[in-house]
Amino acid sequence: MPHIVLNGERREVSNIFCIGRNYREHAKELGNAVPEEPLAFLKPTGALLQAGSPIVLPPYSESVHYECELVLYIGRTAEYVSAADAMDYVAGVGIGLDLTARDVQSTAKSQGLPWLKAKGFRGSACVSHFVSPAVLPAPDCLGFSLHINGGLRQQGDSGQMMFSVPQLIAFLSATYGLPAGSLIYTGTPEGVGELHHGDSVQLSLHGHIDCGFQVA
Image 1: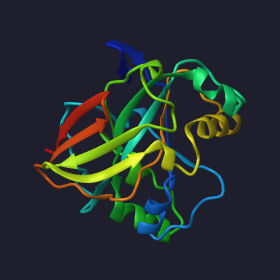
Image 2 (image 1 turned 30 degrees about the vertical axis):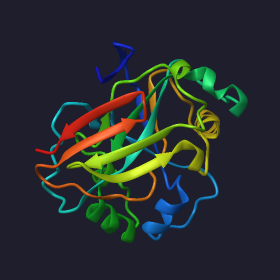
Image 3 (image 1 turned 90 degrees about the vertical axis):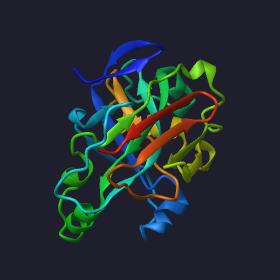
């Protein structure tokens, strides 16, 4: 079964929810409109890739982009949860990459087709291990960053999100339901760009998690 590692223990993954355009500057850099409600999509659980495993770029794309994101693990089923109670359902927090075959996505969008081939390929949901939210600052004070080959490419803070962590959980739990084991990729800040064969990728949830991936 697909799984993550939380405090050293394996925990099963049931769904992978992703949020698009949750940082204003990222929406602007791609020329996208800012959404009025969270823009959610799914990745198949087969897209999950644990830290330390090689990233294999899909052969049908010539432009795979990295998107560094704060990732939540939902520990118990959430239905119609209020934003005030949302954090009670978060069992773990990690850092990850939402990989996107940008050329494939652009073609699909221009034709009004789904994004699955662009967003859901094997290994497109890279993820670190997880820690308990109890050891972290408030959910609107989480800083994270991405380095590639030693150079800083992305730097974000959850306080910059247009829809906060509690708001995302409330929205997803009411609109779709959040079964226990759901992952939520919460959106990426500005600075996305291409991955290339041989790249060394380092992700950091500042002061709490550091992990790496190598592009095959």
